[in-house]
Image (tube, rainbow over all chains, first blue to last red; front, side, top):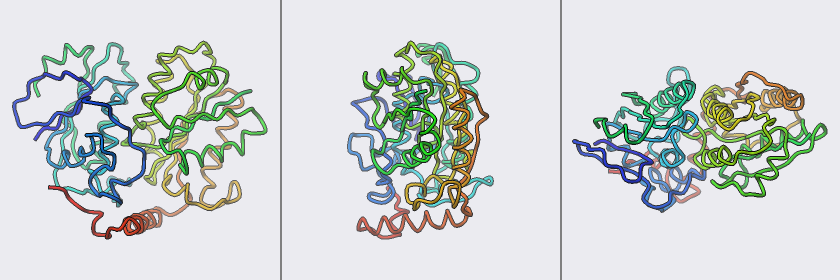
Length: 162
Length: 210
């Protein structure tokens, strides 16, 4: 399953395989750092606003595709809120990978991450930051990076194949 | 000189960012006027904008969330960029705490703030990445410069000098003075205590949803 997380409300890029799209459908609340998704309802966020099961969705996907405005090298606040709220995809315990501390896996699936950033003035430094963050995401999810691309407008994204 | 200390944690109480800013005040308070600002939510108020516009330096303290900046704080940064404040002589400093042991894992969360400075028209003054942030709010008060927080205090003292002088530093990455294996062990014991406190069992920590 492909999991698409995007800040584009009317997302209509065709996707051929089985997929789920998480886009702004109602307000999303931000992660409050309570760790309830680890120690109260392990695997699921405790905030009930329709976005609490992204960690479970991630466990069922083989590819996670982020389609987002680029904000200073980060994904946009909406896409970041979805990512922050999906902390439960990983286990709270630590492991050492590549000499650094990361979290243990909760699930066995290996996610390949693609990111399609858009924005009319994305600097080269921001692109580098964005690529580095997607690499870091892959390390933390114990996954892989498939593709990171940049576009000037949402319109240009219509030509991509997902 | 006025310095705004911005708590970018979503937690209202007992955040590591709050602990770090309290420690920073120890070094700054006699040298400058401190303006406390809380960005616990995703909206910056008009009152906060007015206060921020009067400061010569802003120090953001925030946790590392999924390799970057927490979403609510990112929303605040977008608003601050659009606000186009009149005071462009503001230096920006960042202090990121991460739950991982290695402070270097905060590198890209600082880089986002640095990139934002360019877009918003401010001057980047440098930052600190603090590893082992998970234990900061639980640590008993120790003498400044001593105990497990000694490397953090040293980094705060150094950046204070830069802030006061309106200067820039290279990002500085530190960890708590506590062996990594003990930090890992303590954290894992803590999760087991918390889940039991909430009525669960240790094995529930690894629950998988179908």
